[in-house]
Image 1 (tube, rainbow, N blue to C red):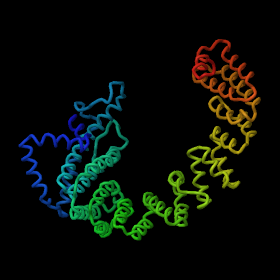
Image 2 (cartoon, helix red, strand yellow; image 1 turned 90 degrees about the vertical axis):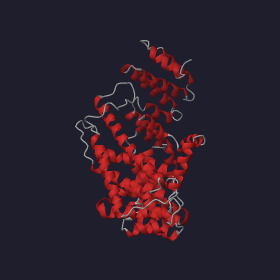
Image 3 (cartoon, rainbow, N blue to C red; image 1 turned 60 degrees about the vertical axis):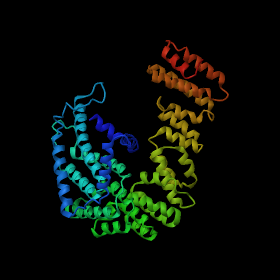
Image 4 (cartoon, rainbow, N blue to C red; image 1 turned 30 degrees about the horizontal axis):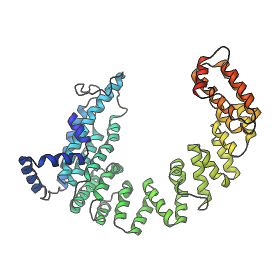
Length: 468
């Protein structure tokens, strides 16, 4: 198992350097290599529809049995490797042991699929992946300890990672465009005929289909195959748009993007990027249309694209959403000149639960008197430093008196290092108050000499540089 793991994790480049060195001095390896090259240069036989289906069923049967042997209730303890020597809960041990068994099953599949890549047989590769998918969703794995909420969902959640491994192994491969076209045709036809109700699951295979399409191929033929099998292109938006892009037909690409953006976030992002560069009015129209569907997600994407000159409504919507979930006052400063009373009121209402951030917004507006109201009604030792900081130069006497009061109140009711760290923090803020240096020094001295003596408080004051 150790060899398989190390070999699987080793880069192709390092493996090639190793084999390149040893093959030059080994006559048997030279002969085997020459025979291998001669055999490999012979074009592999393509599957027909029946053979594709047989391959799917074979893989499904084999790995269905393997998954169902991985019993989370009775894992193979002989193969279990503890991740560390510390204490682990019993339920967690069962789960980790089961995960390792499942990982072994996936690794065996990767080994078989890698051999298929080496053999330059993309049709068999797609049949193997389809068979593995069917094994994953149909496996009946006993789980009496409830190690997984749903075993099949867990297997399906792991599937994309192993497809990613195969994608990485594809890059040195070289498939003919005829082989890829045949593989596409068999794959999509099988899914249309066998999984007509589950075509949305095609998205699991999209990364590998994209990798195959990126090899020297006739992209128009691949698009025609998808279209002729009547598979909804919305299930594979990135693949479809890549094929249109590679065909270098901008009009067809744009038409496809306009058909897909309602159903695919990826397509919508590509369309927005295109329109941002080529058609501002269309960009604004599409952005305003899709933004309400996922304001938080779209705000993060649109931040770098929007401006008030382009469209004030869109700019305000995006930046308000950025304020809501990022809570950064810089966003408020940028959008403030464009807020009307309704939006401003909505902003203050939606952020009112975050008292320190409300103080930052009030400070940005110069509403320091309202910050005093926050201090008097909502201050506690958790948020006090963030509330008092904006007003120490505006209301110096008020700030120092409140710091003194908060210290006295806190030290009467709480005694631990976290509290003392807060006290030291408040004293550092007091030092920033202009014109009250003598009063601040007296407060620091009195706090340091608190009775009864608080050695931990003194230690924290020294650590934070309040005293020397």
